[in-house]
Length: 560
Image (tube, rainbow, N blue to C red; front, side, top):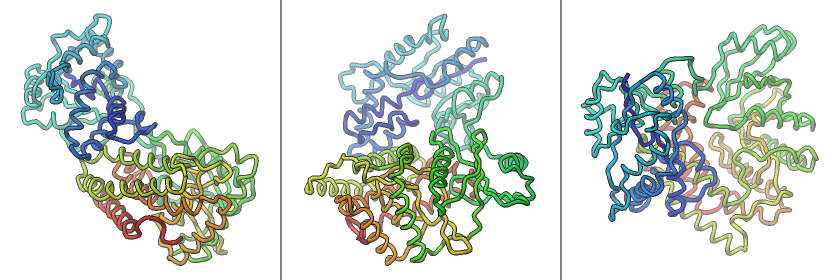
């Protein structure tokens, strides 16, 4: 068996190096979490190329990473296991890389990129007999992609593994060679001539066989499994199990028994998203149930193994057109949550998901969301144009204005909201997450992101939420009441006025989450089948409309 391997971003990965180098040069804003997230190189490339002279800046970064920083590159996860299995199976291994000898911006030709790559391979035991035992003469560097494809053909490989679909699309690529694309982020077009795999463990199983590896997919239970789980958790014979009810991120079933009806909720879990939605909601509902808060469902039991919970079934109707009494219900819940913050048990509750305790944290969160979206810009030119030409200029103008206002008012842009002024927040407080009981009472659902947060964020998110239409008079009333509620914080009104448009820009990016691979998988998990292009276009239009409304209002909040 003869196996050909690409080098850059297939064997050696540079995500952390590209992020660190770009931050050091001031090409992207500092972020403490982006260095550990997947797709760092692709993220940085999209951000840097959007800058003035972006292509030159990007090539400068490449020269530094592939040259003096090459020794800091790491093996992609799973490569060692694959190469060790290849040695065990006596497979012939070849490395074919499209890599120039010197970087374009290395004018003094200080770093021979091919020699630095070979030195890295030597250090990683690629050539050692007690290592991966690849003969050094089996490593080939080419000046062009076409030369690379020609070399692969001459080697008569059985398999070739690469991270670039363009290699397999080259007319000279031999059809008889099995084409394997390593695609950790799931961005590849599945209609290509290649087989996409999320990682080396799956490729190892494909090439060498053996027990199948656990798939990076969302588990969707069959009706029989759901029935079994429902009877176990309720302790009752289920007489009817309704089809999945449409939801944003989860799957919800109505469980009918002779005793009563229950809600069975399955929580979304994605490998790239470590948040424990079920655990957070469990803690939230237990706390609220123990405090006799009647505006939330009763939690009966949980099943961690199957990531599901049994709750009270709320018989009611959706609130599509909120009225003034509905706004009063929201304010009543916020007032109760504000008081519950003094309870001793509340101190053990975590921060809300995506909590923003300072203006700087909000700026950082927006930067991180932009960086994640940059992964997909090559595949979505309309998104790229929106981010570069429309979104970014207004973002930069808004941040500059806010920082100036903070300075003029002697406030620290980086200071966190003091603990005594924080609130327990559902973090997704909106009418799409409510039901109106037959008696008119409003019940609030979905506490998967519950925790401590800044009330400015709670208020801004509620007013900006794209999933509901609230009359201006009710928004004005909400703003007045929420301002009075948190009047003990003398900075509340100022911060709400200043940060509202920045929270709006953050919402623009949240709307665009569907462009991310995990964002689309959330939709498919929640049983929302729809044409992908239509959905993407619709979300882009929503983001653009929100941006236009923010631009129309100028800085600040018009309801104050």
